[in-house]
Length: 162
Image (cartoon, rainbow, N blue to C red; front, side, top):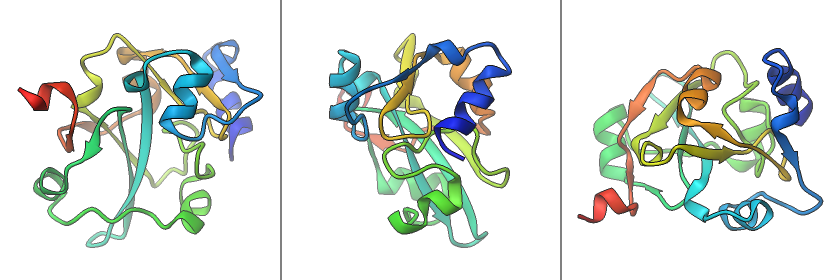
């Protein structure tokens, strides 16, 4: 899997032309925002975790300015946050570090969307490589990620600062 798998995934929806590939890295929020010339919070970063009790891998898509709140994560998933080890990401999910996205992933990986994204009309998740992204509306993100549910597991974004 990788960018080719993501392109194949989006080609079935006639959306392959919406994938951006950059001549520079977009592997971090800051680099992606620079490559796209957009605010960092619009980058939809995909974080990978292991649920140890069930030996399940999950992805949580969060806004670029948000960070995982360990207390909220534990309250939601009934265990502490354990990220997938970097050397196991590609094998476990199907995309390399820096290009992890919620599209064209392995069938046994569940996707969750964090509420930090709901304040935007559109966001930019990666597309399977450390130099790619796609612009999606929030309803499109819901459709194409085949997410399980919305969760509130983040801190450091404006709604949490009130």
